[in-house]
View 1 (cartoon, rainbow, N blue to C red):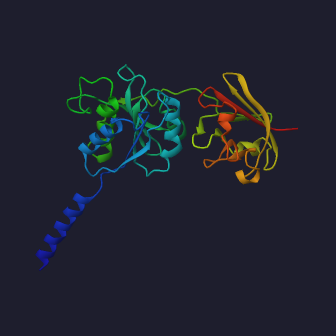
View 2 (cartoon, rainbow, N blue to C red):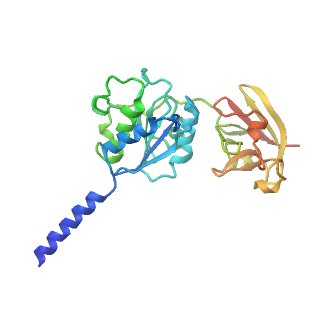
View 3 (cartoon, helix red, strand yellow):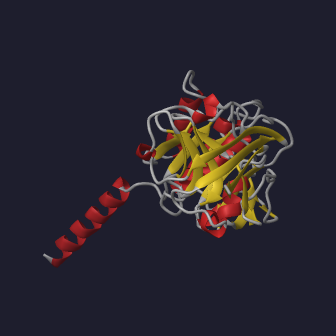
Length: 300
């Protein structure tokens, strides 16, 4: 009887092991959109590595070639995933050139598989760099793809990311170790000086047209700005003033009439500008990116 129980335990252990998921989730981001089969091809490669691999999408609607927005979207969402998640981000206007293909492991324990072209700006800054490795394409490239030069998202990044997430390779087997640095896009960091808060507009809320900044709500208190104060707001692009106005700083949209503007704190606890139920960015021709800067100060 004891022998039979031992055999049953072994059988059940093996069966559950076979049914278990891969080591980590795999999350895809790109500027491909869903009009053709590019995203499907990347997922097909990943499934070919391990059919059990849990695969998800961050977004495939990054504006074409917009490395800056790719960087922000990774920062915006990655920390809400389980530690160990592998992100594959393919916004790669330099595909086929000498830019490096890398995997970054952050100090927070996430992995990012991407070209080193600025995409890693935000996660490197906010999560810190634990280690960077260059993808060795001699062993981490889809078989038979050596003559393809323009779809590294499928042939290199999806394949390597899937192998890493599935536990087929370790991080050390990705390729040679690089210095703990990546190409970073320069932009205005949030700061306070003489009561003036300076910052950047890293992204827009694309569905509603709200203008998001990189200024944490703590900077408002540092500048002496309190709820229900009137705030002087200036928006500039490459040094040219696009907007110079005064807005109320309030807690939520419904505290102003429909169509009226406000300054508020968004879901990431960063200062933002909006209309109640209208598109602020479109109304004032405001976009986002490293060159877009914003200032807030308490109006006298």
